[in-house]
Image (tube, rainbow, N blue to C red; front, side, top):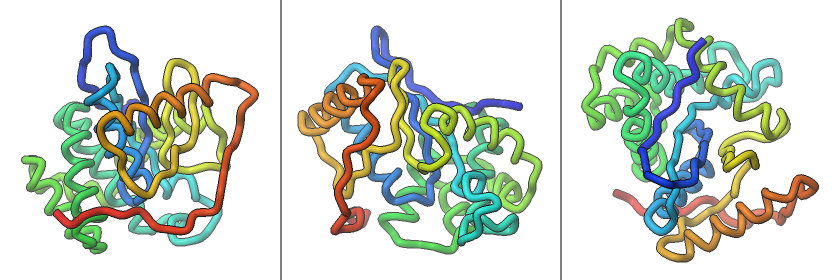
Length: 211
């Protein structure tokens, strides 16, 4: 099995492992926050694919069915990384996220084809969406994140220097030093092994500006 990651090297930086499923708007918001964090903190983001379909196998719901289309985008991400190197994950995820969450396109076949084109990747990779060929590699990418936080959470998962957590769940993307301050706070809380949860009810969905 192959663990698929993508990283941009930053000398003397803190490694941040980030697990995402491109379908999740909250993971998308958190991922864009991490991009902002990298502008004001010395961090190296390692992008890892996880899967709501894998997580919900046997649980039912829209993601839990073996023939759920929730499998499709993550399979294509894994196939692209295996064929062209882990470095393509960042750009392909960005393309998928923009199409899904900014342009509000929900036809996954269209999302995949457009994202591959924008990322400069072969259209033939779209065939991986409906194939189980890459499922073992997908699970191998998914499981290291889940084993650090438990099976009762989802995406995003962030792991930093031995501390891992689900979230932070945000609905807007802070920029500049605000992004850095949120990162510092999340890291500080996660560093306490006896700290588990700080939560309040959400009263808004993620907000993304159209491209």
